[in-house]
Amino acid sequence: SYVLTQPPSVSVAPGQTATIACGENFIGGRRVHWYRQKSGQAPVLVVHDDRDRPSGIPERFSGSNSGNMATLAISRVEAGDEADYYCQLWDGGSDVVVFGGGTRLTVL
Amino acid sequence: QVTLKESGPVLVKPTQTLTLTCSFSGFSLTTRGMRLNWVRQPPGKALEWLGRIDWDGDKSYSTSLKTRLTISRGTSKNEVVLTMTNMDPVDTATYYCARTVAIAPGGAFQYYMDVWGKGTTVTVSS
Image (cartoon, rainbow over all chains, first blue to last red; front, side):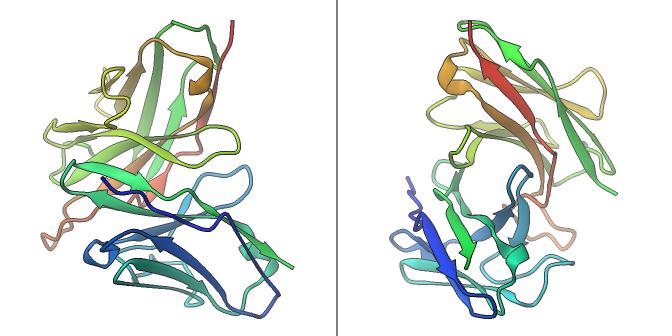
């Protein structure tokens, strides 16, 4: 079964690029999805299938996935990007959905 | 416009059974490829997937909780029901339902949740 490891927190100054990692052995062979959850709100999908953005999500949000690490990058970070970010994949062997532990992004 | 809304008791006692309803609009769960998931989040903790039901009635549950969970269609065609037995204080959480379009119009399989409800908070306490 998969255990998706995320750093508990990431801090970045406004205008810089934030990088949030999601690690698991051979994760590059799975499709990874990312959600943003602002305080007191439901999660919102920001990247699906490693690198695709739903409509309405800015181009500042990008994803990649290779080897043992998937990554969500947020360029030109704004105060409004402060949130918890979760990675997710589907474990086909068990037919279950797995979430990472979440990363809190703080904009300094 | 696709919307989902969770409803149910705010407070349940330990050992009781929790029943939550997800009411949705803007799509039909009988349409091929549609899937409805349940996800929960204890206060200050991460998201946890509970299970799902598909357009064809197929279901899957969290390995750790499957003995306590049942997901079923509601009495209305636009409702899905989550039942969790033997509730414990550690089950205190916000419970979300979320849609997956498991089979895209082009036939590709998809495994992400594109629309979520706002969630309903359940406290387990005597």
